[in-house]
Length: 352
Length: 118
Image 1 (cartoon, each protein chain N blue to C red):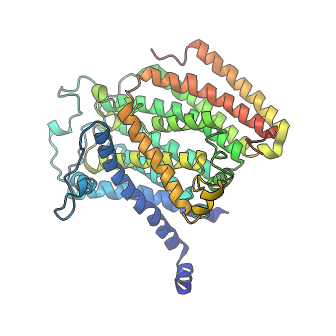
Image 2: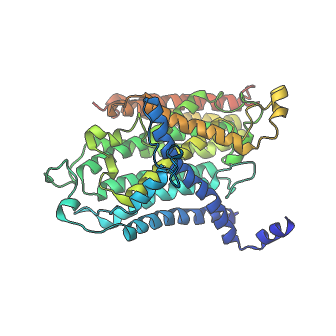
Image 3: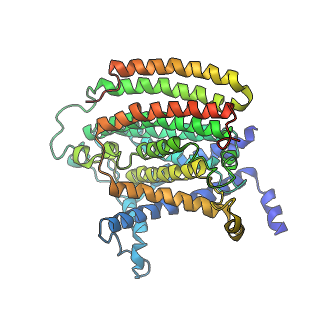
């Protein structure tokens, strides 16, 4: 063990960082792959059908667990069509702008106390900055494709993402006021106490707005007018095929997981045990690692993404914009004032 | 201090590299047989009617302008929110005046109909 620690400390810094990045990214990629599988199976179950259940490994079906691998391999061997009149450079840069930030945002994400790749003070600011980059990928893809559907989809999608980003930003300001720190680890620590101290209760309206904005931000149902199949086919990535499309797909699902994990982190206590402060259960579950609780909470929100898609009919575009501008922004502004007043007034229960 | 940000720089580069590797792999493994029908922009089987880079609704532009104003506002709120404990009542009321001015502007644009989508 000691030699292992010594060996680790002897490695150059860059190598250690690269190992850390792989340790985050490899499970993330597997999670993304099996999230697509889970989506098809869960929505299948909700619509009383089976979903993909054929592709397995070594001739065994295994309930279709081989499906995401087969999908990836299929996409790899498909032609990447470059449409006529497309701006070829921007057309190929757009997916990179989508995937880069979607993955890099995980750099500041704390998985357990102290277990974080880059423990910076401006963690939340960094996440806000990187998640804002996604909209450039969308708009560049739509403009560079030289297709009307892609162009309209990009316009709609960009206006929607931008509108909900404001509500999201205001909700984050509420979290900052309550936690008093931009560091994600300290935001989690400031929620410790019991499940009632987690920010979902004192910041209930901001939690709901953050979560709904997160669904809108990733262009998922019921806010997926950007790719309304009946109107503009697939939206901004209609001209993309093969791996170029797969990269957009990967970025979308990585973003969904990121939003779920951030909601768990900022409003549901991250790695904190839900039994904290409960007399008997707290000691009985003390052996459970914090990472397990974080994973459990994240999985719940990831499931909710799929649940929403199977449950709600699609919003109309004017309704989406009205919800974002005329409902969410006023509510968030009022609640920021309330929370800040509680904080400077030292009102107990909220921020004692 | 600054070396804390090195992993972030490397992570961004690796993230972009993953994209380049995936698209590059697609180009290497996939076929490449373009023809005029295949590469023409998709328009439900029709020939393209007009140029794609056409005029679009001015409201998208309006949303973008409003977004800049509010996003700047959020950028101002971030440091205030973190420092609220140490700046106390004075800081609180200063930001309330600032937010009040913003809200007046917000009501104005609402009444002007800048937020309407019919």
